[in-house]
Image 1 (cartoon, rainbow, N blue to C red):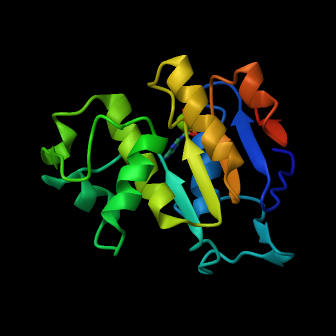
Image 2 (cartoon, rainbow, N blue to C red):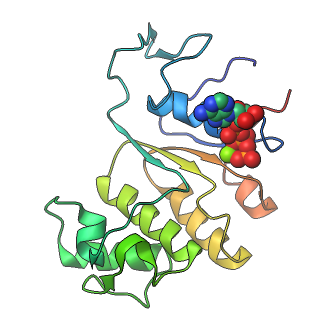
Image 3 (cartoon, rainbow, N blue to C red):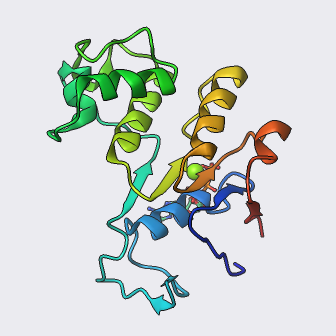
Length: 183
Ligand SMILES: Nc1ncnc2c1ncn2[C@@H]1O[C@H](COP(=O)(O)OP(=O)(O)OP(=O)(O)O)[C@@H](O)[C@H]1O
Ligand SMILES: [Mg+2]
């Protein structure tokens, strides 16, 4: 694969055929995969596999673990976040029909796939990290909702790397770079 360079606070989309390695690339950047060929260089320093250079990243994939508790606790995960902020973030991700005190069933059985993804996104936004990695987080949403959420994400003062299969012209224009990693 050719070199990929990511600069703060630019906005990137990673596209490519299914199975070409988009999710794998995010896992390497996030530190979830430590076995790879090539080098990850951060601020001019080669990242060693044991370095924890990526602690400042919020990473949202399609597997969101939810437990039997309030929506607030599912998003805050023990952090001290105001209820107002959680309710604000729920609006941002188009979940305004829910409030922070909504009770989630184990595994999110009372939620749709798209709702679970948006809760995962809420969790990541609540972290307020300078870098956010998104693996097809709007894939299960209708086009209008997806575009609304993506537009918000692309206005945030952080670096965004989003993997997507669906890139509308509107969203493409808001990105700094689209990286096609097929072949
Ligand atoms: N844990 C793993 N062990 C071995 N091979 C894997 C593992 N995870 C993914 N792969 C393989 O690596 C390749 C890239 O997978 P990856 O999930 O990164 O693709 P992708 O571009 O995200 O695809 P999609 O668009 O379908 O999500 C695939 O051939 C896949 O089978
Ligand atoms: Mg993938």
